[in-house]
Image: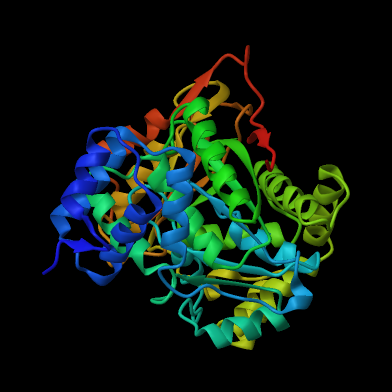
Amino acid sequence: MSHTMGGNSFPEMIMRKRDGGQLSAEDIHTFVGGVKSRTIQDSQIGAMLMAIWQKSMDNKETMMLTKEMMTSGEVLHWPEEWTGLVVDKHSTGGVGDKVSIPLAPALAACGCKVPMISGRGLAHTGGTLDKLESIPGFNIHLSTERVKQILQDVGCFIVGQTETLVPADRVLYAHRDITATVDSVPLITASIMSKKAAEGLNALVLDVKFGKAALYKDMDSARTLAQSMVAVGNSLGIKTGAVLSRMDAPIGRCVGNSLEIYEALECLKGRGPDDLNNLITSLGGYLLQMCGRAATLEAGQKAISEVLMNGKALQHFQEMLQAQGVTADISRSLCSEKAEYFNHLRRAKHQTELKAPDDGTVLDIDGMTIAVVLHKLGAGRTKPGEPINHSVGAELLVDLGQQVKKGQSWIRIHHDCATLSSHQHADLQEALVIGSGEGFQNNARVVEFIQPI
């Protein structure tokens, strides 16, 4: 097995990066080629990832890595008349983050084309695909021909990464997971942006989370990642902007796959919780402004808000469900005004309510703690490919800033095991922070907009 391609040996390149040097365009081309063709050994991939993690990459290197990964497979192309309208959003992951599910059809209702390629949940973060698969019949594996047809007819789809799209990322992603190099800014940037660029987008908004239940705990680290992705996106010719949003308490009131579909549908019927609506209208409004469908951010937010209230977004969602394999009966039933959701979505065998230990104001609800307990109850997976229990989840029965009385139910856990352990019970109770209302911060999710460069 050859160690060289185009005259550059893999050990030399690893050494150069390890010693803080820059990789040339040829080096990066050779490395990604070696990853894709499997001519580079696993140990060498791991060594290069660790060298990048330790010494980082400048904007130029990150840009070249993204471009090489993007062109390692198929790049989607759309009809000429859609130019300027092909948009998407990406979130860095959180707890209760079901934003994509109402946002894609809302953008389609505003005249955009949304080719959303999503991921599965891993560790404490939920995956959009897992949520959608809790709807009977929903199919995330579609051919390129089929997705083009759906985009033409419906205006949006949400599918999984295909075998032919950015194959180099699948290899690198799996290695990052096992080599403790997941949280490298250039590697995250290249992984996310190569997939988005391969979608053939005109505009992209990134929802970069910070807080206790996010990859980055503080705002400055989140801003560094956002700026890296915005710079790479714009230099690839995609109008890219980002928002920094708080990720401490869960988004909305529901966490867990089936329950988040129920909440997403409520949102599409104009009945969603305020913080969820705020995120959807902020991200959607920003995209409409970036792609020229709205003159200002405020006008864009208003347009998204209107299609959520008047049923147009819901109509696109119903069409998307049917286009992706859900029967007309089920999709009609779920989207009806007085839907009995759990006639179709799986409900857990048991529900347990926990009580507030004191009187006071709800100051915080730790989303990370809730996610970790739900993960152990079967809502998440520890390694790719593991099955998950779609019915496990939690419903918050109180809002931040609300006054509660001692003994009042504050959360309902949906579980299939007979009872929650005393340990789980204690952990969940610790997630609730009650105090006097002084100094309570409002729970606005979006903290900052980062403009396209």
